[in-house]
Picture 1 (cartoon, helix red, strand yellow):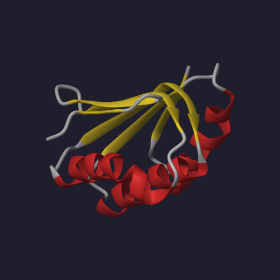
Picture 2 (cartoon, one colour; picture 1 turned 180 degrees about the horizontal axis):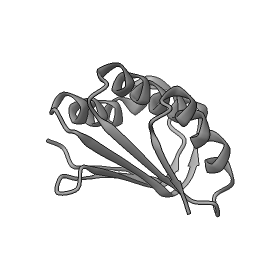
Picture 3 (cartoon, one colour; picture 1 turned 45 degrees about the vertical axis):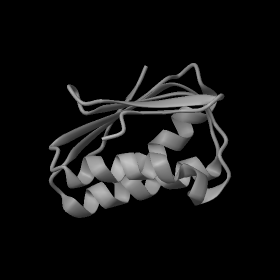
Picture 4 (cartoon, helix red, strand yellow; picture 1 turned 135 degrees about the horizontal axis):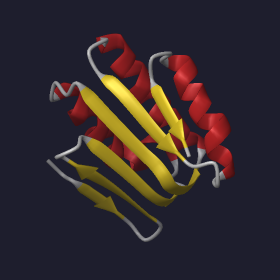
Length: 116
């Protein structure tokens, strides 16, 4: 399984020992096609029968609407399965996170949101 997706502006790294996906940098990709490697990684986590998945966004300075859409679809897919706990870690220091990450919790009420 691909564990690191890297480009000039961002890095998405999967840590298999903790089932954690760490996002860093600035995700300004244009549309679903450019986000596909990240989508594939997230879908693989769902299909691998994990019981807990953590998305660590604390070092993600920017996420555009296409990226928020990708995360929203991921949360909806997890909610449909009803077998996976999701934790999303965010940072109060990054303005977009408080508002946008709360919307993920609306999509999946039992999502654990940790904004530090």
